[in-house]
Amino acid sequence: MSAPNTISIDKLVRLIGTPKCPLLVDVRPQGDFEADPHLIPSAVHCASNNLEDRAKAYGSQSAIVICQNGTSLSQGAAALLRNQGVPAEALEGGVEAWRQARLPLVPFAKLPPVDAQGRTVWVTRARPKIDRIACPWLIRRFVDPHAVFLYVAPSDVMAVAERFGGVPFDIESVFWSHRGDTCTFDTMVEELGLSTPPLLHLATIVRGADTARPDLTPEAPGLLAASLGLSRMYADDLQQLEAGMLLYDAFYRWCRDATDETHNWPTNKPRA
Image (cartoon, rainbow, N blue to C red; front, side, top):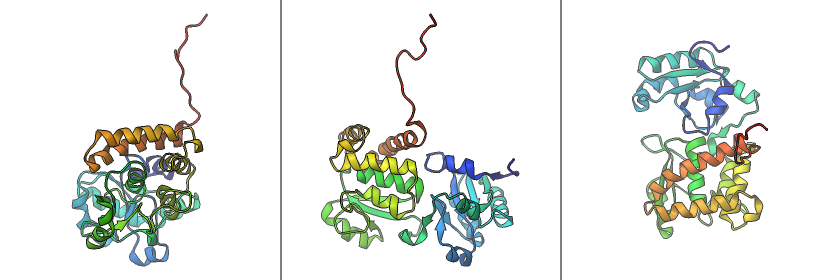
């Protein structure tokens, strides 16, 4: 049974990657963090001595506080947040227990610098279809919930990224892009340490839809159809992204929880 104001790893695993996931705050001291520079997916690092200043930005959003072993540091930091009006719990066992459970950890070295508001900024081509919606979904659900995405003319991507401190993605000759016969979503899943069975399954669907290979998996044509439909429904790229977030939330939950489920009609036949 969990101690008061704590959350178990099993419960947190079910929340990460979903729209209902609380804000995850890694409060390990800078020295400890530099010795093990990895983050639980979607967590942000904020040393406990800076936490009170950051609490105002959290508003009423609930938070889960993470330290190395789930001891007094995270317990105290969670209590501090609650004192500031932020509903907060501490993660049982901390990063160490998460690692022992062989759960994914995001390498901090692969993450881009943040802006003045603590957000990562990503730049890509306007009028997205598949990869340029799938990748922002992955980043917001598993890397940076507050990430900013700038959709611009293809010829302006590199200049905008340089001027605004962003990272270019899904264009030729950059790190975050297609490699061989895989797509940018594949690259991000691999490089960010997110190669879990559900995300690898989703990556195959995205690859099939994005690279005109519907034979890779039966779900790829459906994702392609839905993605092209969204691109016709929305002239505004950011509105399309918001709609696409729900689409990928649904595909992810299917990959994680429902691949063995079927549906038929009628569902409840009367007994003979």
